[in-house]
Length: 155
Image (tube, rainbow, N blue to C red; front, side):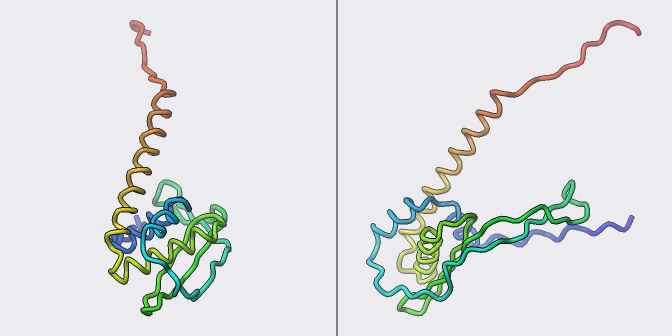
């Protein structure tokens, strides 16, 4: 068999984890975090926020040939702090303000000054996502049907 082997997954870096969680944060969570932190007077846009489409690719069974599943709306933004540190944000959907706030928090975490502030926010986002996953699992479990086979003698 001449099947392509899946490439090993790249190790998740702190920044990749942070950007993933910021992309799933609500606008209110992001804004509350920045209100508690320093005033951001010197934030300069580098790119965007811009909204566009990306192609979602899939594989049947995780190992088949790749195919185009469809398109998804994505918004991205990049900002520069007065210190020169650049932050990036992206998320599914069209919420440009949340994307900009994500980019600011990414830059602050890269700068290092507000790492504690960002760490607290990321932990809160992880807790919320875990609770939501637990609720979904409980709802799914409530609709679970157990099938069994009944053997009736010799047929």
